[in-house]
Length: 372
Image (cartoon, rainbow, N blue to C red; front, side, top):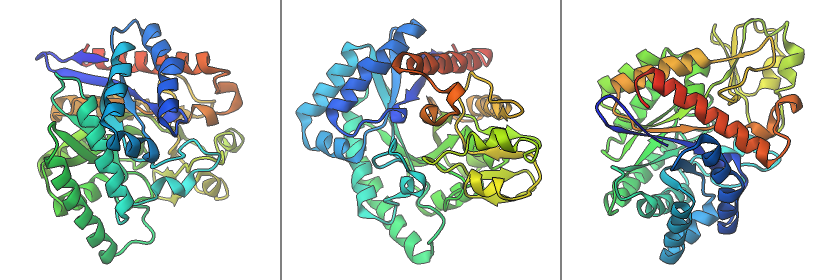
């Protein structure tokens, strides 16, 4: 959806399609009719923004075949859909039965990651609406933190140099954004500033994921101010929220319902205790409060006594809209299929309804901040 701020500047709001499993071109087209069009119709929107996730084989096929790129753009337009941003973090098989650490592979030391990102950039340059100022691609924050050393960072830095050169050759402006995430080489705002200072380029910046920011117990206004002070652009924002629990020991049974086998759910306490997955936290006696990297639906309450980091989301949007030039916002709740059974959609129509409700919630948050 296209929103406008008080100055008339366009703000793009989309939902991320990494919630859908699609590993080939036909699968991508299928999800447009199964989910995206029903979401748009429920919202009453003339045009719905999609933050497309294209698995590596699809991206390669599109990059190699101009006619396939033109067809995708035509198919999107015919359905009242548009794309200004891609999610380039997962490489493929993101909705496999078990993902966990595989989502960080290949990392930025691997030439496959560079090839994939350049493929996405080429595709996005053609998908961009004619009147869009620029495109964005979010990517993983270099790698999972282990193993990591100066040699690996040197390899990643060299690849970012090639990436910047490739982006500069495109006919349209496309920027790539590192997305800090708990447990990764780049986890915090300070680490993002340090990493990007070493590979400074006008085509590179940060993707602020508001659930990740919450899990790091970072103050949103401080984080945004640090990025602005360092001259690091916020290229993209993922409008997301984490789970919170005040007394985890008293809520162990409810928390266990969110400890599922597909995704990592990094858990952090306000006192600084760190666990790479929720089951590890549950095996501890660490006191609360905790925040858990589980992207919870924006509009719905978590199972009591859990709550969600809505306040961080609201404070983050306020800070970003007043203290950054970011205009790409993406609702990224990829966890619908692994929610506790009582909260899980029963079918495609239920998932489309849930995504539409999230976007409606996000639209309300923007309206409260003068963007509508």
